[in-house]
Image (cartoon, rainbow, N blue to C red):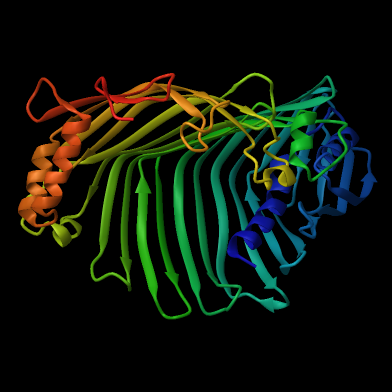
Length: 506
């Protein structure tokens, strides 16, 4: 079993306790009933001892069991005791012990099993639930909350864990839970002054490798909305859940992160380093219409040493973003997709430059790579249908593609471009199996000849090779205004002809 599989199961168990305890109505019994209904909607089977008192309800010996997706076995999680107290003014207070331990057992079919404990501690935790049936609001805060993973056993063998902890401080948030049209909509906002994490453990597979990671994030903030079908039959089929109305749209932001890490392999090789960023975002959207991710960070640094490298690696960039969007459900009409990548103002240490440019002949200005693609496509097969997606047939058809931005800035040269294409899916013979495109892309290259001359002087490019490159540049590009500037317009017309600056190439 892998680190990700083991830690993923543990995090799931912990998250269900910490992230959903507050869903409640205006009486203690309704609080617990609503929580059970929420979790059962995800496929959990829940048992517990309930004791109703004059002031509220106490729940103990709670156990959650869920069948893992794709015949992945079962997960069994025990929860610490907690209580729901009627405050007498229409609100409910949720209380957990200052320290509690949850156990989990994972039986992953075909891979093995894992078990362990998660210890929870908190100080100053207060949660108050208000509102009315079907429209609940809860507020919570805590000075500190910690989760510590202990006693991990994989395939019957204890795993050496020196540390496995996640904690947040100065935590506060608010959530609303509304029922309408058989859907539960949960709107959340949460912020923490800081989040820290520590991990020091051996490789569960061989026990000799070791991974150590620790770090912190400041000013963590989250806003998001989750929609859950209230009466849908629990299923591991995500496509069916999306069709029933499941959806999530949320964004995390932070104002700085720092991480230290080291990895030691079984053969004795090792790697260690640090990374940091001044700010970052993570956005995720998933519903029946779209699946999308947006990840970004600013002022990123990476310092790395490795037993496989004779020198340390130092890199930095001002901006690092990845954006991805695509449809997940078939529709007769074309749907939007997008892909964007930007590595902005990338720099590396002089020691790395000296490997291939010891004399400093190349300009060492910050480099940038940016690609922004948008378009439309039709989807014939649900993206979340595993059997259909294994088919050799294409899951849909590409209809349009727009190159909104293309930038490559490196070693004193810059290539930029933009363009638009439409695709005829009835013609896959003109371009040998690819739907025939029609459209154009406009490109501009500045400093290309100067960079080529420098590479020749450095001995990295032979004169004969450079001559061939210049011939290609003359074929596809024409001189433009400005020193060492070339432009090119590459067109594909409705007959499938390829033209460069009006000259037919195909």
